[in-house]
Structures are given as structure tokens and as C-alpha cells.
Length: 275
Image (cartoon, rainbow, N blue to C red; front, top):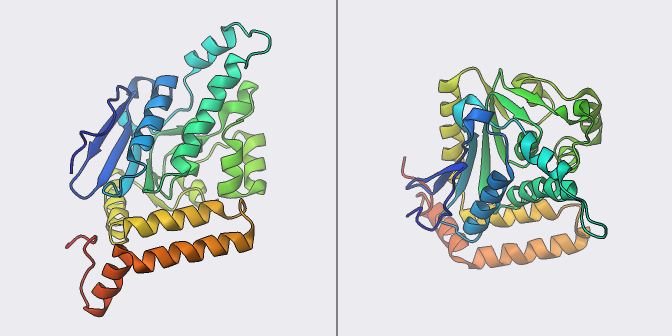
């Protein structure tokens, strides 16, 4: 297994281990990993490069320097606001803003399991990324927030993912209050699954989650995530019909055969780690 096929990145640190776990670290610690347009493009390029790779089974998103992500880079937004808006063309500010929605959507649609490890600042776009992770682990003193409304701006690309993750009631509350809270409160509202007190607890919780994910078949994870993603977007009966087709493909495919055979033989399937 190699990371040679991964894109070259300047603002992300990428590392792929022998288990198929890709560590994707937002790596602009000098600005608390605020997402520049260059970083957004690198995240999209990375997820596009691994979309069809089932040897990459998990993506672990975290931030360098003790923070996850402080939101969008204000300098990019200022440049977009100052750019000329030519009649009949998209507003440059709208183009920059829309890029954040695209990258969050890309992560949301990833066929791999996505785990977010949160600490320090989780603001704006970083908050949006945490909304689309399959498993979220956070330190208790993590500082969550939606600062946009306090800056006179709507969290335009984040709001739909807030509603999907937390429901309209919590999304509305967070929008009108600026959404400032810690890791324990994040768990109370369903944004975070596990809260720990320190770095050692963070690493222990992550390794426990990875152990659970790696016992599941990568193709089955991808198919299940697709079914879940289509809930509410596809007619109910059509969704169940499509889900039945995916089940049939799986049960006749190599993973289904291996999984059921391993169960009968009382052994681990070939995708599960020995430990």
C-alpha cells in the first residue's frame, strides 16, 4: 500500500498507513488551520483521488498545532469582496463562498469512513466539516462556534449541513446565538459522539474507533453510506429498491461470500485486522 497516488499538498499533511487509514491533517497552524481556497482545493483533490480506492478504508481528519479549524481564511474573503463584480458574471464573493459548500459536500459523499478528531478551535467551515464526519471525537475543552452571524454574515454553506446533522431546531438556535459551546455540549446536541479530557484520551478513543471500523468490510461501508445519503433525497420505495439491488450485489460479491464464509468457519474475514 502506498501514498504515491495521493495528490501533492502544501496545506495538508497526508499519511497512509498499512491498515488503509489515511490521516488528513489540516496544516496551517499559524492561522489555526483556517481554510484558504488553496486548502479547500487540496481537500477536494484528495477525496477525489481516493474515491474509488477501497484499500483506503478510513480518513481521519484533524488539525495541526492543537486546533482543528478556525473557519475560512478572512484574507481570501476580503480579496473576493474587493474583486470587481462584472455584470452578468457570478459575484466573486459568491464563488468563494460556494467553494466551501462543495468541499463539505465532497467529504459528506466519501465512500470511506470519515472520522473527525477535534480540539481547539472548531469554527465556521471547520464546524461544517465536523457535521459530515461519520464519527466525531472531541476534547472537552474544544471551542465550537458559528461566528458568521456575529460578523454580519450568514453561515450560508454550513447551515444546510447543520440542519441535516442536528435538525432544524438546534440549527436555528445555533445560528441566532453564534453557537458557542464546548465538547460536552456538542455531545449533548448530537454533533460529537465521544468526549475525552486530554490528548491521551483522544488517541485512545481514535484507536478504538479505528479498530471497530476496520472490522467492517469497506465495500459494505460504502454501500451503506450511499443508502443513508439518499434518505430524503430519493423516493422511499425507489430507495428501498436500489438498496435491495446493492444488497444482492454484495451478497453475491467477494465481500459477502468472504464474510458469510468466515462467520460459518468461526474466523475473522480477510479485511479484519488480526489484533
